[in-house]
Image (tube, rainbow, N blue to C red; front, side):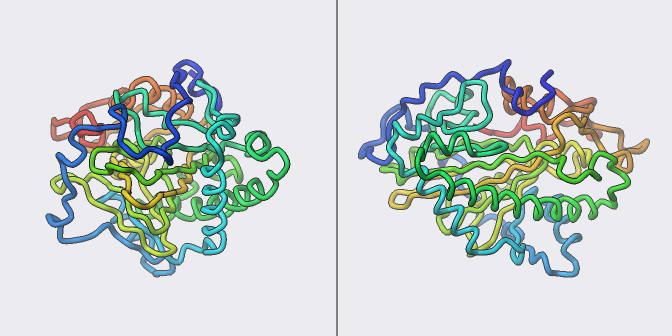
Length: 365
């Protein structure tokens, strides 16, 4: 199994034709982008009595509120998070400048089939027979090499903005992680690998969803869970993010000015021994508006085995998952997609039914 994140996809390279359509110029939805049943499980907004939680991080009860949201939803929004609004504007501007480049220029920074970073289609694309109305750019480590390919004479501004954004998001991510784990009574002493500064890994993902001529038949990003501990998403003002909740279908996460969306990933689900569900989510597209979002996927040190915290395990709550590193899990998910969680599971749930958080019984595509 790979020991580094950069090697996670070498065994399962993604061979997709990068010479896809320039989505900004398409007037009629091509058949290759036409999905059946996008609305067959419509938003269940009218079926629920509560919206996706919104938490003020200056609230004295923030940890308790975060913990409740993680347990009951697997997703929540945060305000008063400390990320300057000017920096959010700058990272959005950097993304727009990237995706507005000519297609051939963007392809100079194309992600290699077995690579992590660079420009290209969603890695989950290989599991679906239709293409998504989407293009993305992933930064893992320094953006310098790819930025030079995109802007040979003027790459400094993009690098400065993304590096400052990553620095601020890393501080917020550490704060959020201990609010989440603290709600379960977990301290730094319970996770000896979490004490070192700077060891956590993260990827910055810029997502572009151009305006679409037939948004009801297209899919921005197909349903999936994230492989990280959790993800911090800035979605600005254009709606598109939906999460799946049992008994309520697809729920729209409305954009709130300056707010950030936090969603639980597979590794935090494992770490919490199934207490926090990793949320299934997708992105829809808009007829008239270009949607751009920025995701910060926060994960543990690459070689650290992640398993249920011992404090959460006892005779009536056995460990549900075997230890797995982020690199190993990414490799497993690259091969098996939505079956990855069940493949690292040790035992069946205590109620004898398939756990919906393993996604075997959850519709994800």
